[in-house]
Length: 336
Image (tube, rainbow, N blue to C red; front, side, top):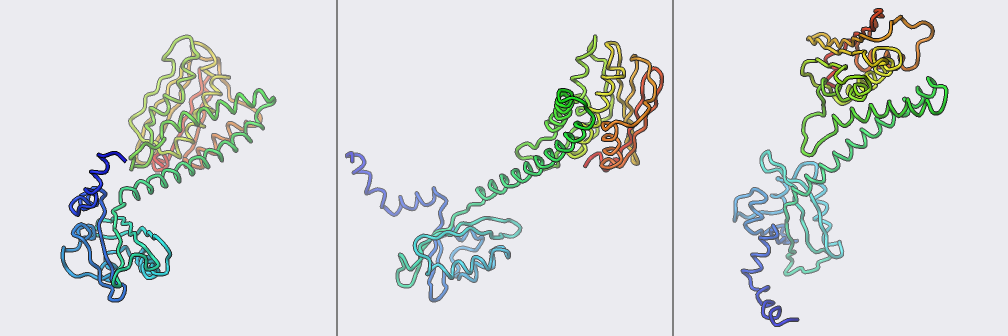
């Protein structure tokens, strides 16, 4: 040990320096008479509990401030401290008016360090740590929920794609495109640190992001035009709309306006209190005629999504110069 360290060591045990260290650590002190139930606390402990300084208190007095859900657990833990061997620690909530705080009580059990029937310990305000833990738990739960939903959707898409394609290469391509559309939508509604409101995206942003890859496939940029009012779309509906837009765009790319370099696509929206109407208008593509025969699985997916989750309807007008799709959505479901 160096000379400097030796000369500094006595300073550690000077009462005023011990007090400085305790205050710096945010530690408050208590002592408890195991026979009379009387408690003694330093001034900072009184402040922590929201009790006027200097008055006589017992454990029962402190219990009145403990959160009702934690009160019995804390009482049982304190009663059992003399049977606990070594150090013990218990975290619990207290109420100071409308304010909730988390406290960690720590001490020695099995009568270790007991002096004249008095046990000693500390209180620490751990509210910040507990709030951080709760935030992480909420985020983990939210992410778990999202992942389960996405896996369920992916499983359903895999089943639909396997039935609507003929080769493994075709299935891989179609499934990749559908999952990519989900990924783009998910990016728009992912939670951010500190977010308190429900995750949502703007309808215009969602449509623009989902259709951007198709806009790059023509002879000129800007052939896909989105003109919708500022409207929020909830997380669940964002996923559904991503699937619907992908199916419509894929059909257009195969058979409609997006299948030729000069074709255009216009998307408009007219909202009101009873229904939100989205109109998908294609023009400049090959001549269009209504499909005949059995409806494909992709079209069935769109129909089920619109009538099910969106509580709306979808209508196709097979005009010769381009299909017009009218999508009607329940406003309450749009924001869900």
